[in-house]
Image (tube, rainbow, N blue to C red; front, side):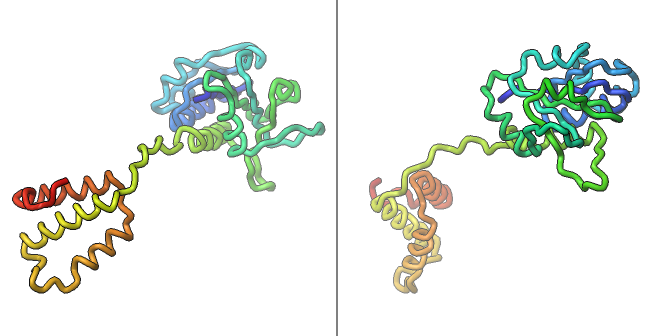
Amino acid sequence: MVNVRVILVGTTHPGNIGAAARAMKNMGFSDLVLVNPRFFPHEDATARASGAEDVLKTARVVSTLADAVADCTFVAGASARSRAIEWPSFAPRECAARILEEKSDSHAAIVFGPENSGLKNEDLDRCNVLLTIPTDPTFCSLNIAMAVQVICYELRVAGFLAPDPAEPESSPATGAELEHFYDHLESVLATSGFLRLDEPRLLMRRLRRLFTKAEMDKNEINIMRGILKALAPATKDRTPND
């Protein structure tokens, strides 16, 4: 995975730093950099971290945004304000997808500005894109920790929650394998008394149709044969040679 860094610039309330750390840890992120925080370390930050104290302990404090992003290949500046100069703008989901395009050993950063003023244009000069969380236009102000939570959630969904690599697909069962299975099934059903060979009542034909619809592969056939052997081991020797 691309290493994703959260950068908080000029944070004035230490509690917001702790809450942001908690939001990061909720989503599996830990790389936190603070640019000129007003108060840090601080007991309010620790209290609001509520279990994410390890993120605070490893957080780095630097004096400039340039220092914070010096090793980053992609930087997104989060802001609710539009800018006079047209700026490449992404929503969180689009930004998450873009970050995942970076090489696996790269560093990407999401930058958040001070609570009252947000990022300055000089800060955005250090960013590749503007990141805007879609909100109700009549009330678009988000607490920093809320914004961090939204962005980290989208990153997690985009990458950290990607489906596990699928198991190698098994080849479809052959006609011979299916016939061995049906013979085995019929033998077990007859031995159990469920199937009366003198009055089959089309049961085996219906079961064939049922399993045909399932389109079983080799692994699934083996599972079914294993179940049959476990349920009626005495019938093992009565099945056709495999």
